Length: 151
Image (cartoon, rainbow, N blue to C red; front, side, top):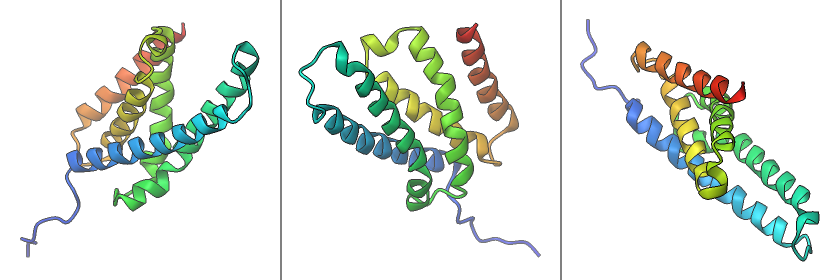
């Protein structure tokens, strides 16, 4: 006996799109919070505030990564926890490329693009319906990006 009813799970492209929207929302919310915290530090500007500002921004990026799991559940991306775990790892690989190629200084929005690409890549990586060659290619590209810029 075969099941002729269509599957209820979204396609890999739909999962990647939902993941991208969740990552964009988490990044936007936490960067607004970081901006508000940096502005309310009371600094007049200059290098004395740089350390606190960077710590606040990276703390909010970490908070965005942690808040991804509930957002993925809210956006009905199932299973959400593997994407929430793999996304930050891919983001670290892309961060190495962004920092080493000095893209962040010229175009600050590359951080948002890196987060988007990391979570879309994570959604594709953990989806068993995606061809194994595509998943291995994403892993190889991430590792090559990380290794080529680290050493």
